[in-house]
Length: 401
Image (cartoon, rainbow, N blue to C red; front, side, top):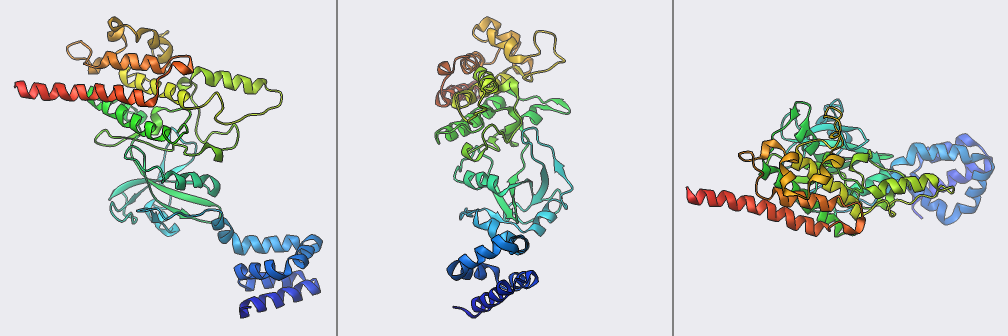
């Protein structure tokens, strides 16, 4: 046995035989706790258990909490060898976020996030406004397993984890900060003008990300909305805060704010069944949730891109405030397209090519019956066709001129 283990064992035995709490505390504080725990496990488990049960439990737990928090927390989080992901120190996070003074509002997550700046290549902290904008999100260690597991889902249309910092009870994760679609499209300064091609490119990118996640066998959000679709300067869409494993979530809990206007009809049915269930039994990802439910909410997002309207707006005329209820009946007939289509994307007061194709796709996604909704693969195929047709039109016009 190593000398330090013998020393710790001797001190612990002396403290236990004398029943002196102070000596026990001193032994715990002075010795190497990791090795002491090993020695304890090998030889002293029965007597230590007795001591805990009789009179020393409170003091032992106090010493354990003071001295071993980090080691205990870390052992529950197996840090994978993630390529190109930086391990930050707390001082680096303080420097990058200006001492956590710059809060970044999130219309999707219920958590507080902080804006910061890092070097584009090394991810080392930089001065405010210099380098790459990032946001820092802190979670309990158990929930942060989702962030680490998310790195298995490497895809250009998913927001990438840049780094993390692990402390006693929480993990802070660092992501690239990109504006969300809702802020880009319906920002504080009013609606932003997005071309038809830009909207299609955003839709294709989001669909590619969702299709990739759906192939993993789970819904990524259960309820998708514009706030969780990030859009960079080139209109490339990236999905953020997707749930790679809903089994980490407690039954009936949600890591985000639910929005009824994006919810499929079965979601309401499921909520009612939960309320009426006298047993109070509730399971995440049952019939009220799933890929088809997510396809419905993606259809709502596509409808917003098509119409240029928010999913719900009290300032609109009566009868048009709820976008889904108002627009859905008009999507299946081409003659009605000009009524719902955003005026900013019309060409000489006529819908652009592919607009009716998208409108019909939206109507398929918004089918009240789950089984009638298309797969994400089909949605992606139609969106790509719409986008490529616009590209061909641009090429053809250049050739003619």
